[in-house]
Image (cartoon, rainbow, N blue to C red; front, side):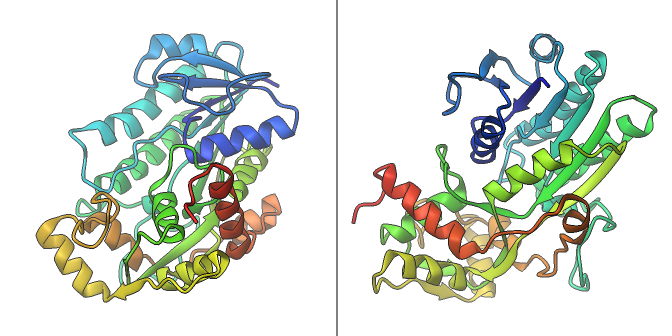
Length: 329
């Protein structure tokens, strides 16, 4: 079985490579530059870009399964079109080339933010509609559009089989490129985060998402969707666990959600409350009022999915930070 991955240098990508290698599966990696931690040994590096179809044809030659993780994540709008170009046009290029190269399976990492919701939404599952709301952030709309595009390719009678997973907020170790939540956790562990938002989200371990991606690749259906959620915790609860792991009395103060939202609207960044002005914006703050009830029942039934306790996730993340020399105390 020949496997290829886009987005391999990211948090999820590095963990997926670890998992696949543990199953004795070598990986072909597409990257702009050699910044993938697991690029040696049995894995092969290909220089290219999902916006460049010529490089994709070489990359996908004689590949059986593609894991498409490459994505432009943004909490600051469209980034001059980069979000749409990467997440939508890049996905279109990739699946088109997969079909041309006769790839058997296309496994796409979507996002829970692709789904539609409002104040009356009681539960989000695989039957929830994809968002068409133009008021939603550029990232949300791009992930929704990419998902629709993949469905169109599948429905058009192409022989490629598709599986799409939708993770919630990803946490965990092996965060070499330092995700936004990784940076916030590191700030907590290093006593640099003074304020948080009075809200919460559904959190999932990056290793559980990696496992789910691999299990979804085994499903023989033409086109399946799986929500990979974990546990809803407020930011205060999440960081109280983190502080318990760190075994100190450092305090993080929780600001009222509406107050933070107003400040973010006026300033478009809460740099007054954090050392990194890109961590809290109007778009990132709005995510913390996402519906609490996000069902992983289908993944549990069909994949055997069962999310681990977030406390274990945070302990492993803390230990990984320590191993990397990133925690001062």
